[in-house]
Image (cartoon, rainbow, N blue to C red):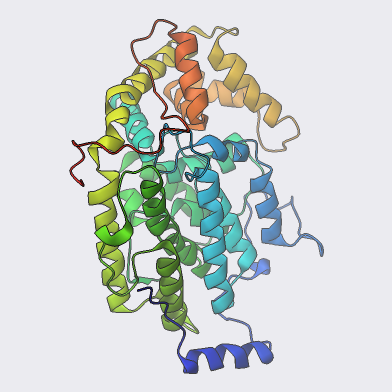
Length: 418
């Protein structure tokens, strides 16, 4: 039976009293705190406040539209009810804004971080991220992480002068690391931020060390986990990968998507209100850790889900990577890399004050073209990736076979869950 928690009478009364008194949260990030790399531009207006401006910059970023055909967890299904990354970032934004509203935080900042946090994600979800990292690291010794690349997209590739607080929240959003308590760190300038970004490219442990500099970034970080935990279970049931939510332990947060969102939200508001950190009840935290582990065991590591990734998509990444690297080294202006990536960036930044395509070319063509190849591959949607493979390799060995609309299940005797 579903069990939906509620705030204690004491916390609810305190929140209502503070709202009636128009009391501000002293730990919230104020619009006046905003730091931009180019401080002389993008002054806030009455009708377009500081972080609201960042929300709009992200939503109108050329790569934002590509969320709609990027895998969240489940690829290769012609099923309009399966979550794509576009839906995931909206869920994160809604959950984080609900928590932020309860804690009286800066909702525009929360929304900007949420909507931008996966904009640098690869096609085919975390499997694609692993495959691209393996290739990139083998060639350069550097590491690819989607959160770091999201910062690169917003700060370097389609540069719109996004604020330090938003970029920091994005790089620190690592949704694979759950904590009972999130305490913001101090970050005052872009020099330190740029060092943090570079560390993530060169130190395999650096990505896990990133801590948001705002409570809003901390809220978004935990909301990322809340948003996918139950929704991935729903999606797994829709394709027949699992029979029901009864496979999962309920503990303190429940098993369904609705229970998890409600009960996690309540616990976070209850234990964080009026505090300079984000926290939750210990029992809720333990249940969160266990629920995430169960998702890995039952969903993410399911061989039926990963067979297509390992047998077809991984080698396709390999072949595309080296074909594009060869195009970069040849500098052929008629190649796909030039016509569909270099020219794309040039057109996308034609009105930008901060991006120069010649500088981009000089920075990488003459030193390490792997960066340009990674930029292009990471930008692709699933369908774009598949079409490019067949365009460059019309007689290629590998094929991604989509499960059609009228094949409703992947039930198989080989599935260990049955």
